[in-house]
Amino acid sequence: MSPVFGHGRLRLYLLKLLEESPRHGYEVIRLLQDRFLGVYSPSPGTIYPRLARLEADGLVTHEVVKGKKVYSLTDKGRAELERRMDELAELEEEISASAQQFARQVQQDVRETVRSLREELTKAAREMRRRDRVASKEAWRETKERQKEEWRRHKEHWREQRAAWAREWRQNWEEAWRTATGTAEEVAHLKLERALRAFVEDVRESVGRTGLTEEGLAEIQAALEETAARIRTEILERCEE
Amino acid sequence: MSHWTIEESATLELDGVVALKATLVGGAINVLAAADRPTVVVEGVAGPPLQVDHEAGMLTIGHTRMLEGVLGWLRNQQARATVTVTVPPDCPVELNTISADAVVTGLSVRTSVRSAAGDVVLDGVGGRVDAGTVSGRIEAQGLNGTVSFTSVAGELTLAGGSIHRLSARTVSGRITADVALVKERTLTANTVSGEVALRLPETTSAEVHLSSATGRIDTAFPRLRQHDRTMARTVTGTLGTGEGSLTVNTVSGGITLLSRPVSDEERGLTDVPGEDE
Image (cartoon, rainbow over all chains, first blue to last red; front, side):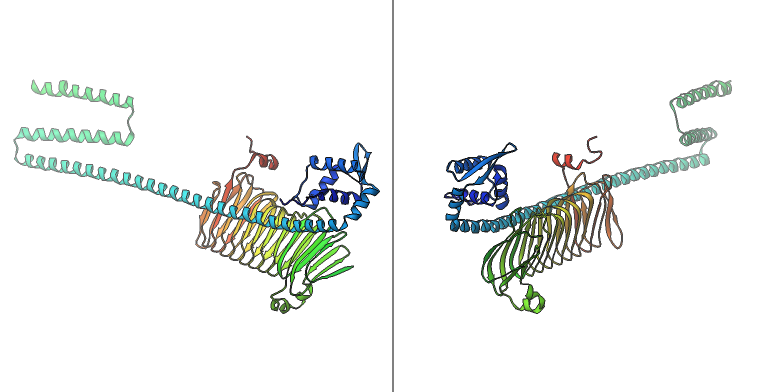
């Protein structure tokens, strides 16, 4: 802030304000602020002592209206103002110049704010875009992982299937060979094996269709044991007799 | 009626100005609000003298007569002046310039600035604000009210402010705004190739519609959804209770919608429903 008031000029300007009309202290402060568009904003601590000094010098006088001191110019004060007219004109000119200076300040201030806002938003946008990109990359990686897992499971499944088929194929082949070449007993054993396997597969398939609970499993186990016992006691022992 | 013809520089003090209209070719025009007696300060007049008229409260400044013949002012490159005017805050102001920069601060009723190549700076202006340029930048801070910005190639930037309604349009200029929407809560921005970057408080309430034919759209508000269609990419959704409206359309310019945390003071002022639960 440039010192608009030096060398007793504030005093001169106060006289001018009071010459326009009688005013109280606060009004004087507000007028100064208005006139200097906020560039110069005097504090009450500056203005009230000055008014008191002017009064002591006999240039102004005050009367109390509604509890406030209202200052007005005395004849002596008017004479001083008259005497310093040239100086006042000069001061007014500088005040106008300060309006221009104020406008330039505003321009500069707004430009700086606007520039920093643009930079800030550009940076924020870039940051957001980068985050989005990372997020989408992660999402992509995740789906890729999931797919890979899926494929691995599929492959495993097919490998098992192939192995199972191969086993089945070999057994069938061996059976066929033996039924064609083996003794009667061997053939009977083979037939038993086939019946057992068919039984196991049948049960497994049924369970696979309906699902299995703990109780179900216990019952099945009991049924199997009972069957095995009956095979032993009712069929095989009778055969031995 | 008073009339002045200013050849070099002058300072005028006037009694009562109810409206200001200034027309300038080059140089600068500053309009400041002050509760004081209105003043006009003219400096650096080059070319034809500046005319100042004060009639029935209507203050007219400018190379008015030159504008009567369009070719007149185009031919004359040297028509310059620096003009600073202080008027009461409630004075409607209309400024027209060719290449002169304009600065307006503190006015509260009606401000209209048109410029071809000059830059426009607005600070703490309220009421209805209307600024348009061909290639000049429009830069504003702390606006309060209904704002309309138009430019062909100039950049529009609005830093801070409480906006009832903002409408911004450019062809190739960038639009940047960091504002809070109040009252009517309407923000519309249209560009062809200009980028649009907006930042709003995270508590903003509005129906949002962002659309661009080929530009990318980024938004920091998680409640908005993106739809990619063959002809355009759009982002739509509802923020808060959806009481406002936020519409951005571009052809090739990208759109960025950012959010910012709300300060405690702002929260107290705007009183957003459902915020304190």
